[in-house]
Length: 267
Image 1 (cartoon, helix red, strand yellow):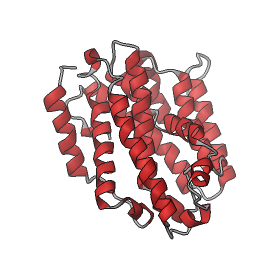
Image 2: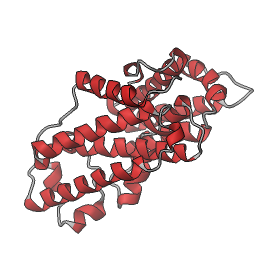
Image 3: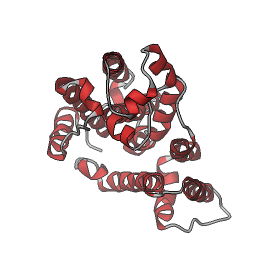
Image 4: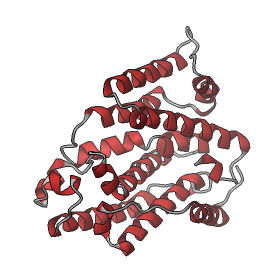
């Protein structure tokens, strides 16, 4: 995703590319490994690599970690945020279901760390509140992604909708996993959609005006996520169990350009 932000200076763009590469490596561990035990072992190895990044006694062996090492000091990337990203992928392997919204939101916050806090640290900020904004950006973009791929996940036997939400709307898990749909499930989806739309307005109020220009990439990610949510709503929310909509890459590029043309500050 970093290469889609042409207005960033080369150093920041390359730094984001390293983070997105790490995120992709972790995703492939979870989605391409057929043995969950092996996948967890691999994630533990990545966790050890992160620990070595912050240790003066060891040099990480992976080239990606070596590329990440100078970025830690340059952009003050906390170890806790990198470890949270790995924790999110471990959760995908170990958590059968999220019990309530708080568990889902914690996972989304951790899984969205690259789009959120880590990415915003590289973009630059002057107000501490910008990091609160960044965390919510990563979380919200991840929630929209999960919403858009409910059907795709269900066909893989995965269900991210919290148990409490299913019970609230009287929707048995098998209805979702079998892709059948129901009036109750549609009501659940519409309620969740409305909650996500409201969160966009809340998130925008958190960004200090002084950092608006620097956080153009985060604003672009929000704009793309909002566009996806509108496409789902216009298409019919019940269709998320049948197929997954995406925002085509050319349109993503146009949305990124719009953000920079109206909010650009030299970086």
